[in-house]
Amino acid sequence: MKIRIPSMLTSYTGGNKSVELEADTILLLMEKLDVLFPGIKFRFINENNEIRDHMKIYINGLIVSTLDKKLESEDEIFITQALSGG
Image (cartoon, helix red, strand yellow):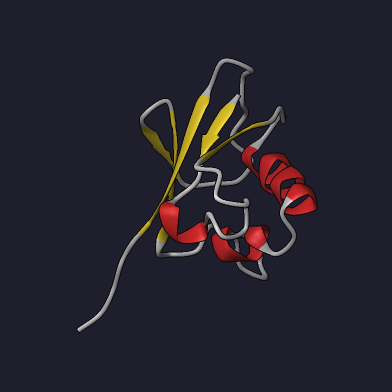
């Protein structure tokens, strides 16, 4: 499946804006991403294994609220990061 990485986090992926991986759930996908790109999981998921408030994860255009969401090999994952400032 294709995972689209937010541009603000491509420093973790060596500049790659997308990555191809396979996993059964969002949590397993994040763990695999972290093996390939150490530290990236913490940007998406907090210490309680919850999606951070400023991060949004979409599967085929539908927002996901939990990490146990099942994935299929043809799914496309979009990760977005909210911007803040004053």
